[in-house]
Length: 425
Ligand SMILES: *Cc1c(COP(=O)(O)O)cnc(C)c1O
Image (tube, rainbow, N blue to C red):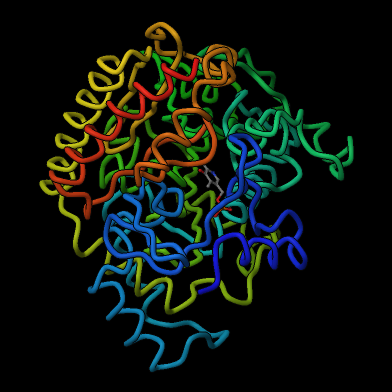
């Protein structure tokens, strides 16, 4: 049998750091990642045959759980008809229609192959449409790894403690202004767009305070800037209508990813028709992609959305809220300070010596996430067969495949893991 050690040694030789995305490395928690052989529903199996209850779910791309039979069948049917053509296909039309039906105010979308591309393209549209250059983002929000937004990002950048990234020229971020989350900045009329994660899920989980999103809407309107909701995580997860349906604020542009590809590479950006009419071939803003609107990805995404209803999603949110409360209770009973944040079916787990207060911005999140407790809990949970993300700034992504028993098992293991962490400290 080839071991995790052996696979990762081979990976290290031919892939920088052994990973294709830095969040997968164990750099911020210590140790080396296991190599996944397969996944099914709520579980993963590594190459040594060890099973884990998985709360990463490809960072939220698998809302129905791994290898959902309906999604597998849809991908198979699509693959048999050819996987990419460089020409229009029905799948992209059907998925675009579905997204526009579900999200109020979303009139048109264009598909790309990742969330990063979706954000890059939405920003280009905003700049092209307004004729302005500046964009405003918030400290701790992650919007993919394109140059313009790779400052003060959460997620892997937060984990690795990088200020931004080497290789990004100063000029590329000269027009990016960074503001603290949950405070409405005063904008000038040079601002093309304000981009925000309406529920911030890349600096652990930080919820918008009442008035924040409404304030952004009003401030954008005051200066004629566009408001972009980056819903690559929140879209079709917090609610089928997106964050707007929860927060009652409508942006001008949306970006989506993760859920809408059913585990295959996809992204989408969209908004009102009058804004998107600036895109080529209709207008002067160029944007393109060989694999955009890929038939396998659109088939998988449609199948996910076909199998999620408002009722089933509300039920998942209820189950996850109860699970979050039990998890918090178990960690505390085990002697660890713990507070769990909830947004839809997303959980943010904060651990410390004493029960932490929920943070409202990146500085507060960082103070908790860098206290050294998460890496210990992460390893204690992993030893007990529960896989969380190898970084304190990621959220837990329970899926539809997580059963009541899975949650109960996780809570039991969390109690014992907390005791082990406390014993070590
Ligand atoms: C994951 C993520 C992205 C980037 O998506 P990729 O598909 O990884 O390029 C952008 N924005 C948010 C909010 C994300 O969580």
